[in-house]
Amino acid sequence: MGIFSRKNRRGEDAVGAVVRRCAAAYSGKPDWVSPDDGIFTVNFARTVCAETARLALLGTRISVSGNSARAVWLQRQLDAFAPVWRRAVELMCAYGTVILKPSGDSVDVMTPDRFTVLDSDGGRVTAAVFRDVRRGVGGELFERLEYHRFVGGVYVVSNRCVRGGRDVPLDASPWAGLSREVRFTGVSRPLFAVLRTPSANNLDPSSPLGLPIIADALSELCDLDVAVSRASREVRDSKRTVLIDSDRLMLPGRLKRGGGGVGGGAPLPDFVRAVFGTGAGEVYHEINPTLNTADRLLGIDAILYGIGVKCGFSSGYFVRGGKSGVMTATEVEANDRRTVEHIRDIRVCIESAVRELVYALGAFADVSGAAPSGSFELTLDFGDITYNRDEDRRRWYEYVRDGRVSFEYFLQRFEGESREGAAEIAGGARLV
Image (cartoon, rainbow, N blue to C red; front, top):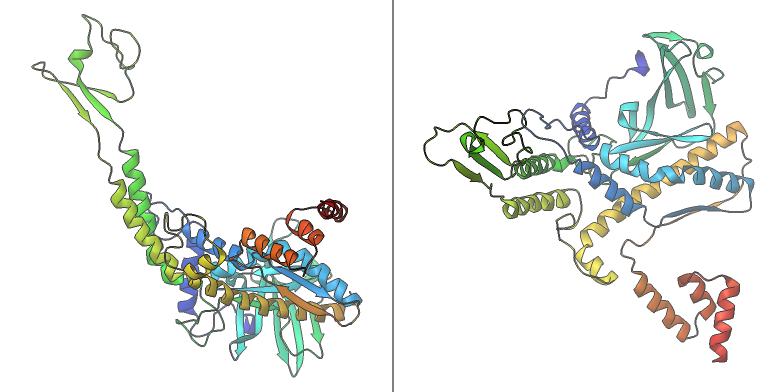
């Protein structure tokens, strides 16, 4: 296979093993699930990754300004990819690293099972092979290997197609018409964007790949599934049961068998069970299992506490009843300082990936002629995760009272009024 070998670089085996376990936990198939032992999963790994992505992209706007055709084209590409950003960040949290690769009119989100890093420099990926699998007309599987690397200062992208372990021409594959090799001159960076978690890779410090944010919490995630499974089993087994001697269920010569009723009458209540007694004395025994709900919930809260802290969140973020009442933005930021800083770190990684993606899109536009070169300015505006609308409303109303903004602008921003409606209301207020 040569340069297209799927073998990982030295030192990445340990990273790959952890990534595979985290990916399995994220997909709802952790290795600790045991139907025989009654252990299922609540898939809290996905909850953590999804919540991280939600906070990181809360109120985020990515815009390209400028009067050039290149600016308009780049904005159109980013707008098309906008619905995918949250999924990409969530996958980054689950896999540690994803690569955003321009592909024609779209951007592919590549997880580690779909790429192999072949070279890196200073912690940055400089060469990689990307894999794509499709079925042909006859149902056979084709695999395309796309190799990115620098050769003598020129950036080269090569395509190779394999079927059944043998090379096949691209024209005889689902990628017919695709160039076997494309060269880019004047390129100083790889034409793909690496989106990785901000924390260091303690399993292989030399690896350019990041670790999933749930990597350190796998044991706690296992404990959570065990605790919830045991609690759920206890609830299911807590059904009230009444044991009654079968002799007490008979009328002379008549016992309804099968239905459990008395004398051919209605069936017994679901919680009643007939048992065979000796005929001596009464047989009536009621079983009311005691639930250890309070103790189990305390244990689950302790596990959730550990998961939250290990995944970068403030203590008590995921704990049941950990947040209560209405808090101001200042109070939220003070209580969730660790969460806020964690999200800021992830946003730095997102911004770096966005700039790399825009650079790659521009290079492909140069080669394909999709949009001529032109000046533009990229702006990323991340929303405030501690935003409180009531506080914002009061602050802006103070601006109105101080004469720094108009009342019409306030009505449009916070009351949803149109420009005409806001002017009419503001005019009425001035007349009063």
